[in-house]
Length: 215
Image (cartoon, rainbow, N blue to C red):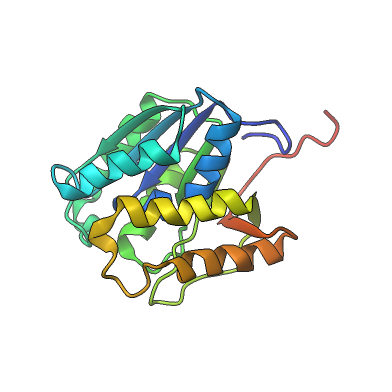
């Protein structure tokens, strides 16, 4: 596992069950990281939305959220809301991703997310990426499943505002949703910022990490 304080990652894996999950949950973190580390490799996998408007949105969005990065994105066509019924396909995709990358950091959904697609993907990630720092992002939703995070990435006001702007710009198919608005995204970022003595932040669950206090 990555040691605490080991430095900035050069290789990142980011996964989502749906197009926009990665950007909503960790878009500010990706912006912060990619701006600080030009050329960082980002291997992204999305399980659903392939072959249509949603994939086009995702490709444009992640390119904007990962400026200057070596972005490698795969978008599959698993049906939305049916991941448990397509477990073998999802598992094969995650294992293929694991086989071609050795990341310093993994961004993935939370294992206790209320959405079955998010939760299923999260469980697959815990078996495929056993010796890696996995930050599990949160997505606000009707279910009210937000928990008490254990890790925070502070966001500058510019990055927080840019995240919200990019979400609105690149995912027009989602604008009709009642929770998909500036207040929701910026409000949660403000709350997480309060919790880590910053103006804004993204928050994550961390299951395990290895310390190197004597290094």
